[in-house]
Image 1 (cartoon, helix red, strand yellow):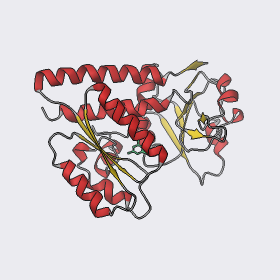
Image 2 (cartoon, helix red, strand yellow):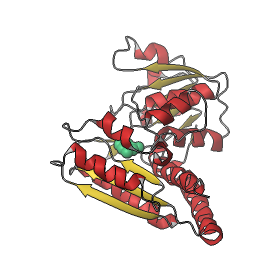
Image 3 (cartoon, rainbow, N blue to C red):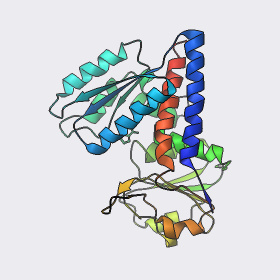
Image 4 (cartoon, rainbow, N blue to C red):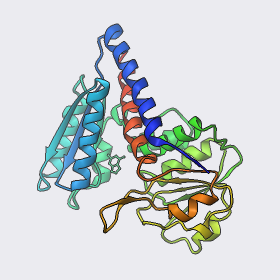
Length: 281
Ligand code: GUN
């Protein structure tokens, strides 16, 4: 069993972004800029946004966070996004999800200029991803693809089971895998027999937010298991969606939680923002 070290790979990506930023500054006088919109006071969202801002600073980006109370109107959020759309210092716009219930998330995401949509959530980018065209791709699944590449894990012809069909993880993950010629099964909350699908797969990718959902008898010997879940349990510790202790001995490769997919999400956000800034040239 080999651990896939997301922390180390994220650092490698971050270092290479920092080098390119320095070059971009010197040669083109461009400083990549990221705007983050954070609505409400969800502690997890605040923690994520803080980590994103810190990472931006580390690689030499300009970054700005718009903190808004959860009483804010949809129109005010839209006005802020439109301001960022026309701000030439801003290359990437990220609206931290989830948004409060009175806000129509689809409507908000639609307002972001697709060329600044570094989260890859806009329907324009999702459509381009599905058709196999160059696009901004959601950071978490993109980070998983980077892990496969780094560890020389071949995807063509492999049976992959993606557990969870969210717009921000499962669906883009499945599209990326399909584009890489894998045979992809997507399971979700209405799937009749989850184990029947996961136990046949060469690779299981799970991101649903259910601690310990994937158990030892649900994966085959030698499987590759990618755990996207980050769950804080009663004793305060972080665990994934995989029962790591019992599943890991069966795996050829597995990602730990923490230190697996988590750090990759921010690294790919930096990479997407740099990609957008380069398009200024
Ligand atoms: N909420 C949970 N994950 C994400 C993410 O990758 N991007 C944004 N904007 N919000 C999230």
